[in-house]
Image 1: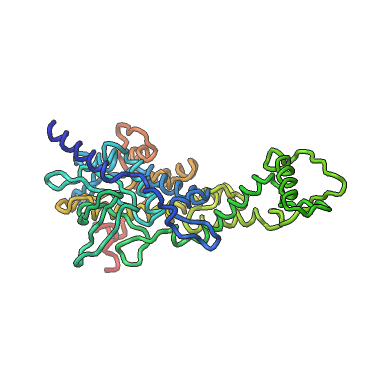
Image 2: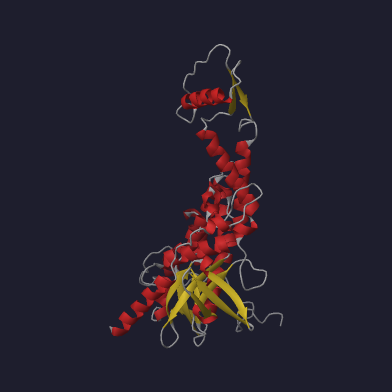
Length: 404
């Protein structure tokens, strides 16, 4: 019990030193795009397309079970008896579930290009907890040919070796630090944020183009201001957008500026959503763009999303965990995400595939039931063999030697 208390005290000390919150003023330090909008990793999330893409990918990664396996000869088995199994599969630390921690790390990589977690190790060196750290609190240095990590939260600074940090990096030009996707796409995101701000200001002004009030005979600036304020009180904002306004006979209101419909405003916003979808490699239908979608195309795009978008991220996670977390003295251990559920088609397609696999003898009844999350049945582990089939090389190894 004393050892558990000591570890909990250590965990709490780590949590206090390295908070999971973003430092203040981070957004203010970010550079502005050419559109005049400040684009940072935080402010980019205010663009609905960026928020949607980050959520879609990070939640898709986090929902997949992360399994620790052990190689035993030419097969593998779940290493449920290993202490790391629960750390990776259930809860990496006392404050977070596996879903929450991996969602946090995935969002960090998608926004900052890097995801970090502090590794808490037992006395024998085996990891017993992972504590995600905000990317803005970590600086990666190369010191005397070795990579070291500087952790800073505004009050304390600490230098740690690679053995203490899980580092998941995105696209990199030096193999040490990942590039920020938000920084690379700053201009595209800035245009999208500018379009959203323009739309908000348009509706805040009553949903109409700008107007100019013409009052003959008034030259005093103070009188202009008084009449302008009086008219704005009646017509300003959404509340006054449809209010009847009576003006003296010589007064006129002229509309100035270009209505959003004439400026291809909607098309611009839709194009920026597609632009962000291309950057994150997310199918448009997942962002609500369904103009050119059909049931068949959506199913195929969903499978392509897993193969082309998710799998590279999953491999980054798995290989980073293998490199930084798994004990090097246990080379038979490895981790994998279960993606079978995401690659399954509709029920008719699955059952046809199962029938083929059962008929040709490479899936048993229980294999199929496990794929469908069903309990195995007695006698369901037998495999069929077509009677009209025979090996090319009788008495040999099924024809593998043919042509040698």
